[in-house]
Length: 147
Image (cartoon, rainbow, N blue to C red; front, side, top):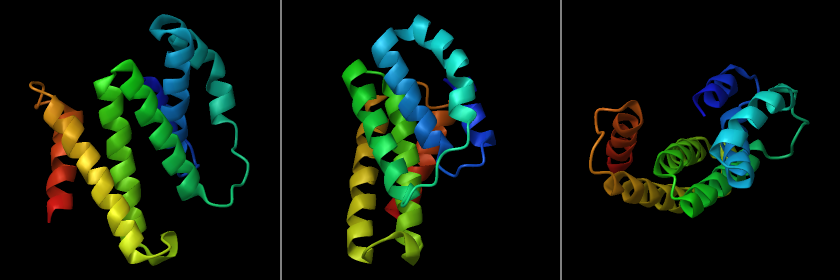
């Protein structure tokens, strides 16, 4: 998973992380953890290939994040769910602050509030590990959204 995220950050497509989280969740669901790692390595060339132009990359990224969240919940993979929800919150923050990315400010704010609630729910599930990078970032996002 870490290798996939590192790879996604290096790619030029702005929503590579969403795509990578989605692909990782799909692979884990289909093949199980051990086999998924092998398939991820084999599929790196497919993931790193330039993505075709899309009409609305924000909507596509949002779909990938929501699918990754759904799969993580099915698998009870709380760390993957946390990462996908944090990415969804960041995307929706962008949509709220950048007029060209939203249909209406009210709709964007409602979606951000929904994502914030999802983040609070998954963050509050954890009982330890609050010194880890993921939970520290989640706490920062929660604090930022609360303002």
